[in-house]
Length: 385
Image (cartoon, rainbow, N blue to C red):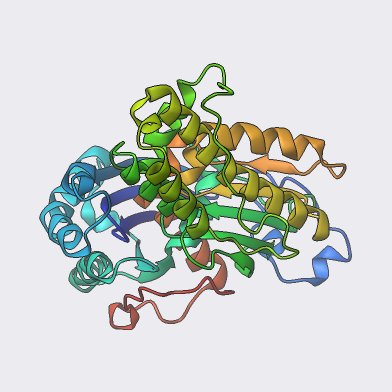
């Protein structure tokens, strides 16, 4: 089955073509009597799936938004409108497929910036109408979770039927717009157990970087400065709060951390000219965010007896977060497996949308796959299939 994925939730225009093939994969495990009583992908897909990434085109708008220190919605929509057709042509050319062989269109319908979403959704609907093929809307967050099944360099990705040691899973989804802890009891069965009450972690990185004039996007800029710090100076030591880290819930809040940095800069006008002080500040800000994310995730993994921990979203590309989460996971007595997408699939891309769309189409078998039923929703929540 050939799936065309379309992603325009924020400032990256993504078009991908993937091939899903169930042939040739043996079942990874046999269900027990108890497991066979529940309806899940374990029973519905006895052979697993091959995902071949035939093309995965991403057109970035970083240069457009860099001078503003963040994404400007209307400018993003204009760039999507300019880039989406050339991206489609490039994706089709690179995949070496005939347009008539596309079986399904998967498009991000939310959450995201509504001007951006409308460009991708309307473009996808037009293609579905023209080609007279099914179209399915995909939650952008579900796409990030599905990115764990993608392999880099366009090699075949093996989606193995999850065995009993996969669920329940705890997903830490961290991006510029979202910071959530999600309990996954089966594919398509989600429960948000915690989320940010104000700024997302990625947004906090961006705003701190803007305060320090480090450029956009803020996450990589702060990580770069933090990595330059070889030894912490006691004279230039910086201490920042870890918001909500002690609270007995799984919610997050990063606006206070951003404000603390604002006041620190205001009260240290001479020190801020010292690059070592800036490096100390970046390292502390990055560590403050990581500490909160890991503490809440580990606590959730223990409470829900997670057999799998998933890290996804744009901030999942942060090397320190990846390294420290890996170390923290190994210390858990239950020894859950940790799954993190390859770096190239952490940020927004259409391949993850195509995979998520295929899985929903294959296992939910929705009746409404007509272009008329697809609409953009900027505030779309992650819901059960």
